[in-house]
Length: 119
Image 1 (cartoon, helix red, strand yellow):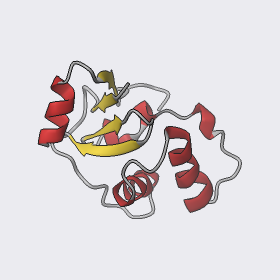
Image 2 (cartoon, rainbow, N blue to C red; image 1 turned 45 degrees about the vertical axis):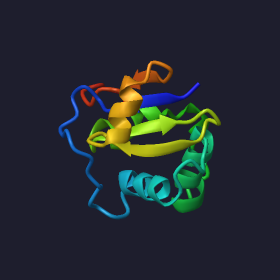
Image 3 (cartoon, rainbow, N blue to C red; image 1 turned 60 degrees about the vertical axis):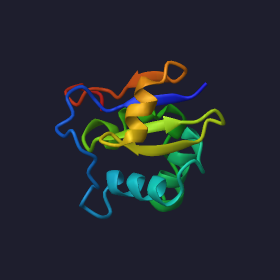
């Protein structure tokens, strides 16, 4: 089943923004998903970001969640998970996002709120 992770309820933007600070984790995540939509599963995505690009081998990426990703919390990007469990960014101000949001066959999940303590 397809899934759409919707932007956080308390997102500071209603438009999709590119993280502007190169080298930050959010920027690297944006770069990975922009370069290769639907290439990675959730686990593969976190491995690419943290193990390969950031060289952080000690992290436990299996505990990471797409619902905590700053792109969905602060930058206005929905995250689409297709039937093959591959992920891609979807601008919240796009026709694709609206179509996925209105499609009853697509599961919807909310990104975590920015005000949560454990982000």
